[in-house]
Image (tube, rainbow, N blue to C red; front, side, top):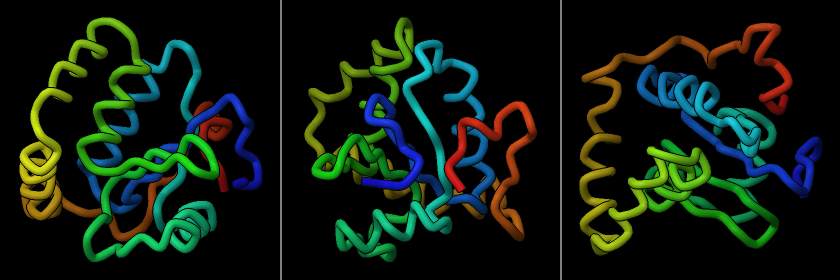
Length: 139
């Protein structure tokens, strides 16, 4: 179990220096009406814990992970679609893309992930949440 993660929450781990990832996290925060998600950068202690526990190769997976429990970790397009399902209508309609084979979805996801710094830029350090958002983030 990750310290500070309540059993009824899911943890989204993201690339803390990626502008696209930070924008996606801000979007999720606004639309997470049921307060399902907590967040942490991959570079954080929580992120490092999950990476080590699940033996994640960060050269292959370095943008988004969805940690639901000790035995439930998803990543790439599957994580993004599972997150959208939890955001409710109309976001949950994106689940229709589960009909596309994973290798195709992840191919598109990987193409965007490979180019995210070039297209959207990169920060020098992980984002620091505002006081209002601090409760949504694990240290």
